[in-house]
Length: 197
Image (cartoon, rainbow, N blue to C red; front, side, top):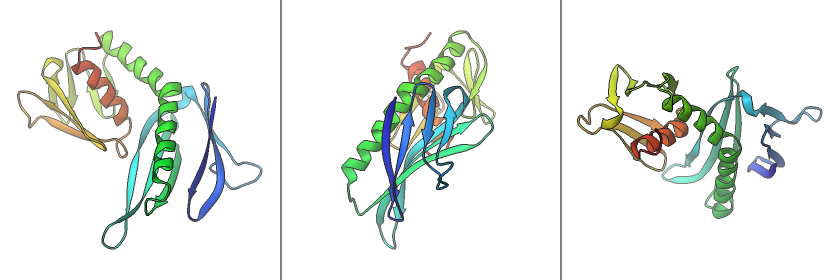
């Protein structure tokens, strides 16, 4: 079990606890003294998205908000977020975000990814992040790309999957906006590098 202390921003300076346990995730995101925490058990996690939202002033960016969204099977999302302005405590806040994401991967997302890897290895059809993984290809937006023709380009906030033969067959996914994009990116990277199967 790991505990993190989060101060959300200028107007919410209360120290809030985030507890990441192998069996559950618990975050102090409420203000009612009798009921401060929201808890999601590991087997309830159905979706994830995370990243950095940049806060724009009049002429330039003045801050950033680190955001993590964990969705359960009933469709409710837990939002873990904190802001910084004018680069104040940038290294400290960025490291906190990275440490939280690393711990989430270690306790939850690696296991979820391994379930999809098993389905892929067993030639089972499944949908992840709006992409249907079939026995010989992936399918999205009425387009198909065979696994042998599949390629990926990664950037800091998004990635693109595309056909090596026909680059007009492509799809872009954003880590913060698109549910389970981080899992899709990891799975396709493993497939294209021949790590699985």
